[in-house]
Length: 165
Image 1 (cartoon, rainbow, N blue to C red):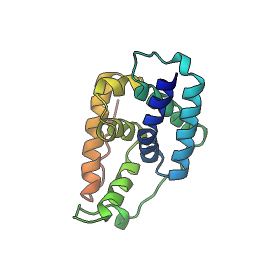
Image 2 (cartoon, rainbow, N blue to C red):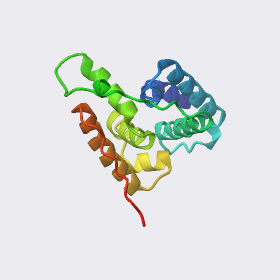
Image 3 (cartoon, rainbow, N blue to C red):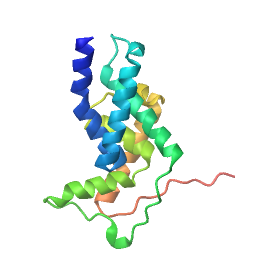
């Protein structure tokens, strides 16, 4: 049990980083991490010792975050033309521009992008964590990367809506 406790503690920095990127707010991120650890610890008997504790905790966090979004959807963000991020330049504002661009991505794309790029998870693990097919992971990741490129270049994200007759 001590090993599980230490493993759970070792996951805290990654959980916090992912929660911060998901919520865009450090206070909300801390609450999400606390809820995740509390639920994980209460249900530690459900975790398979041969499984990946990190992926299991990320699954819990994802489900908690989705539940929170369903309960109170975030307010719509309206940006003026001048508020779009500019083309990247070498400087400290790049990270802020990146964070703003990440928050403009749809949550499903942002989650996949963060798990793959920030948390260095394999596509298969992301699919298991989010309970979605592998092809959906790859599709969302591709769309997220393209949208992020466009946002960081100061271009609007193209809507991929198709007319169905």
